[in-house]
Amino acid sequence: MDVCKNEEDYNPYEHRQVKKPNSDIRSLANLLKASLGSGILAMPLAFSNAGWGFGIIGTIIVAFICGHCVHIFVKVSRGCCKVMKRPLLNYAETCEAAFTIGPKRLRPLATSARIFAEVAQLLTYLGVCCIFTVLIADSVKQLFDRYVTSFILPIEYYCLIILVPLCFMCQIRYLKWLAPFSLIANVLLVATFLICIYYIFKDEITISDKKIIGSPARLPAFLSTVIFAMEGIGVVMPVENSMKKPQHFLGCPGVLFIAMSFIMMLYTILGVFGYFRYGDELKGSITLNLPMDDWPAICAKASIAVSIFLTYPLHFFVVIGVLTRFSEPYIKKEYRNWAQILGRTAVVLFCGGIGVALPMLEHITNLVGALFYSMLGLIIPGVVQTVFLWEDLGRYNWILWKNSLIVLFGVFCAISGCTVTVLDIIERLQSRTV
Image (tube, rainbow, N blue to C red):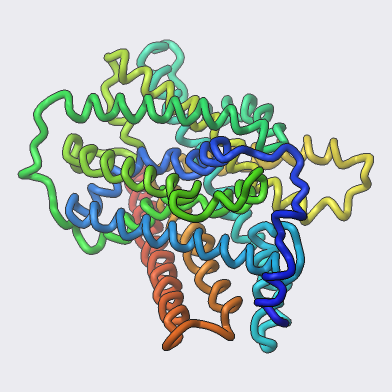
């Protein structure tokens, strides 16, 4: 198949017919919201695991790797669109197309590659929705425990209570309609960030007792948290595919470049100075370390709860997209609307059930980051680009060597991060029973 000829003959952007396309600003808001969430508030805890010196360097390196993986995946998707003369491809379809175009020996694996990618997306964003459920419940519980003392409930009950409004929010079916909520959530998140910065610099900071490099045994936990915080690749293809001008997504300055630069800067600032302020006492979200008797801190806790609540449907969009593609062919057209309503409600309740069963915010965050985001954001993009460019891997096969290192890094993060997190969960559960 002549890739170059197809690239000259077919421009996928000219053939896209997107219902309710997004502007560059709205696309940037959705992309920022996909990566800016509970992850940024977990960065100080990540720095407490790694030490501030390693944390700064590690965050910059991970941001570069994650941004590069998103970049190469979008380029592969565009290349596949040109070769196969398709206006757009989603994440899983890109994986299938790359194997279809790649070496003949791998072409029979194309369908398996698509199914694997779909399942990886589904599990990743189910995990994210579980994390968001616990974070919202944690923040609401802190406020109620402090100001409604006659109404003390375990966190599991708050997880169940917030499922009702989440079920209604998740009935929104178009990214265009989610964009205003993303903008509001971004404003609230920035406000929370500024309040956290205020408390961090409110008093004199002591760094002499803070670690420059943490224990090697805790470095996998750092990597898991940072990868979770940085990655938003499952939302990237829906955002790029729904843009009015998708050619503005890549490039410098493109939507992706602006988003990743802003994300890296915020994460590093809050991570290092949050660690300087609270040290090893940090919790899964820095807002949980803020005092309970100051109005700015109260506003921060309320703002992050509302912000994550408004962000939930954006990540849920990926989950329901995968489930719809699997189930829709088996559902009669006249029943599809009811199937959507009931299916969306069932998924929200399932994520709430996981939150009730395992309400450990930092541990779920590390587990999702280590296992699912490493697979979705590092391993799969490295493999897919290698397969797609198999006939032209550059001088000395440098693309093959580069992607091999990315895949090995992803595998290391997955294995080491899961091991450390599972041991932490076992230790915590045992301490509860003692």
